[in-house]
Length: 187
Length: 301
Image 1 (cartoon, each protein chain N blue to C red):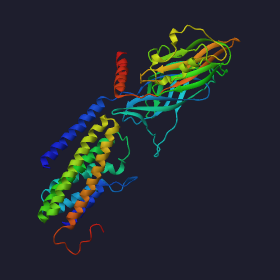
Image 2 (cartoon, each protein chain N blue to C red; image 1 turned 90 degrees about the horizontal axis):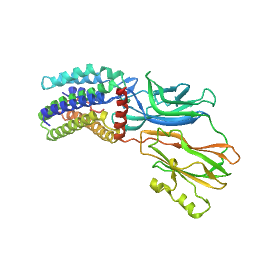
Image 3 (spheres, rainbow over the protein chains, first blue to last red; image 1 turned 120 degrees about the vertical axis):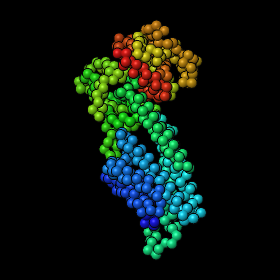
Image 4 (cartoon, helix red, strand yellow; image 1 turned 180 degrees about the vertical axis):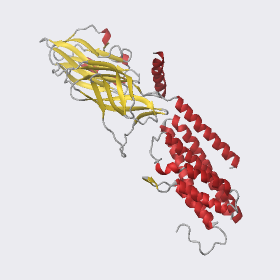
């Protein structure tokens, strides 16, 4: 379980962050493969991991071009649609991971974590959906003031991505019956 | 949030993306549309002019050159940090953007070139070449003679009102006051002339200097230029005040001279000019109307 959650953490970390020096050194396909591998380990205990695993496998293939194309520069033409597709994909994988996490914290019977997971889940999904909705109109809207709203929500999604990673870490640490072999998560 | 809501919301957002994309695509301009520029230039040194054009927001090309006959204009190179062309939107209207390009006209044949055009071939960095209506450009030889009219005062206001005050330094006759685009701009550009009989009469001076920029055009002293019966005789020391006003037609860009043509008492012809330069400021409805008028012209042909 601990290992599986670590895989999920680093998997999402790879998808979320980019280090663009020639190519993306935190390659999205590696992130999706890590998540798929983490899901495989959880499959027996949490059957809902099957869907997350499937999406992760699809994501691993679809996100391959993102390693080589710098998606953070403006006026990308067709790559902009691709960039949006990746955003959708990230949201879907996060949604499925949340369903697993909710089951895990229920099993832990840790009230504080159950509450936190529910909160992060609601905010994460709401902010990401709102951001995608607003972005869909930006091609037909004047940059000002529309871009201000989009930028505000982009900060929101960034915060929720971090919150999601922190939640993954917290759940991993809260696992009952931890063995002595476990190192500190952030070490 | 229940799972079903998530998928419904995601589906609706997906539809929104598709619908927005289709709509944006259907409204795309086939090619950039230039505003109407009214430019008269004297071939002196190299001349710098800003052209403004509407294009699609996702247009990543920049202008490489603009040509008409022997006229050649090249933009100032502007490169971004990564070596690509830097694209600057002068104004943003959602799907469309108004971009400006600062070009330098080069003079290949010395200063005696008379040329007139309403279209230019525009070459874009992506290889596109379009023949675009750009308004009206006139070139004429430069006039370096000293003017017998001394400019004492000149001002312009942000509501496109201009005032120039001249004083005759010798007796002279004014035969015409105007500009090069009388036909093109008859509904857009107006000139008023005022010649106080005695320039040193304080009342007359007050009339001229009383903050005319705050006044309505009608309240400005002087006669509309088409109502003036030329010639006008000025003695040495007489003043001449010229007011001009550019209408609110925002899709027209002026880079032209108003001129005063006449003869001095000694029989020497003079041609005194004064530069009027405007920059466009469009509103959304101007853009819609302008695109409609231009694309309609195309389909009529």
